[in-house]
Length: 216
Image 1 (tube, rainbow, N blue to C red):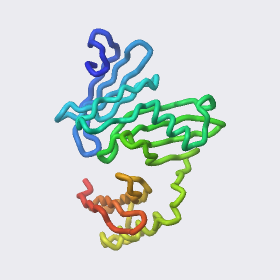
Image 2: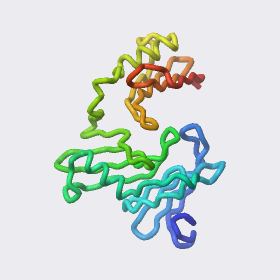
Image 3: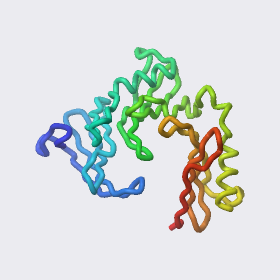
Image 4: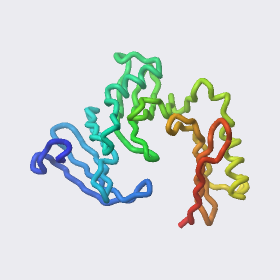
């Protein structure tokens, strides 16, 4: 609440929960001030803001821990999403604008409707690059996506490396994403005994990282 600029006596419906998500312990703090609902996630070990959402879309962006880093504003992130989708601002109704963190990178999650279609975006909070976008639930790929190996090939590479046949994989998925300016496939699947996660270069097929954990 100090970050939002309110005293505890100023807010209502204050709730705090200790949780484990994305491989770390977090405090989830929710409260209401006036007509706005606030949802914070704080890293338990440091107190750093992990994610923040305000239902009136007046997103408060935290100060970066690294003084050399600057985040783009929520308004700029909305403009980028509209420009990428070819939608005029006056024709869009925003449903969600959230500052979040995913795979170590701060992002904006943006959702809006226009012309009867629903748009969803993930935008890098530092560079402004579009990480992912969907229209009516259908993922959109960059213009040069024909140069990429494809999700099927990424699964085959992970299968060969892990020794797990594709028919034996459970909950398997391969998503095209951008990490630090490089397009990659994030491949995840399970067996009865283990959980696997791969990051594979989308153009070369090179395995950039591989993790294997016991499936509890």
